[in-house]
Image (cartoon, one colour):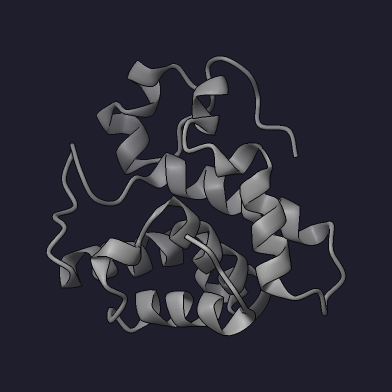
Length: 143
């Protein structure tokens, strides 16, 4: 998903917040667009409990059940939020978010499988990791 300007990123983030983002736009790139915007503009929503509530409510509003096999995934969310925050920290406060997003998507985070270099598939997609933070079993997350 191309983010041509900061308005596109803001639209995604606000759409998650107010539950109006079309589900088809809640992609890997869309997740990171929202993460970057939240880190910069609404850090209060990036805390573990707040982001869980935000995404779970968005999922509910778009007909995605939050279960042991689908919907909100706590470990993936927190790892991705940490990656987005770390990436954003490498830029000036006034750097355009669409530029930051483009670089982030060209980095290792742009590969939807990036987490599998840190977690085994069974651990990452198990119920405990979906419900709560689970430490990596392959390689630590170093930002």
